[in-house]
Amino acid sequence: MRSPTTEAARAELDRVVLLTLFARLDTFAMAAALGAVGACIMALATAVLLVVGAPPDSPVGPNLAALGTFLPGYGVSWGGAVAGGAYGAAIGAIGGFSLATFWNFAHLVFLGLVALRAQRF
Image (cartoon, rainbow, N blue to C red):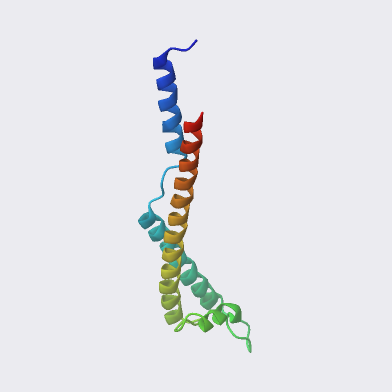
């Protein structure tokens, strides 16, 4: 038979493991990280197309230029690389904030359900 102190220590260890496994994400850090990644991807994708160029009588990056439909001011140009970087940062930041918020909410609900189930036993 286990002693009461062993049971209490085991319960505390289980609690620490659960809290560690389901740690909260920092929403600001996730927004900043994905914003930086989005900015780099958009700016670099545009810059690579401009440096590599296109064969004569062909448009430069028609697929990437189609983003100008959804992102006003964006085009496959050096100014478009700056605008694309800004749009990528904004979209990445919104996505990162949303992802972290959803992650934290899902884990809060899960841990609440685990705690309610544990109280029944």
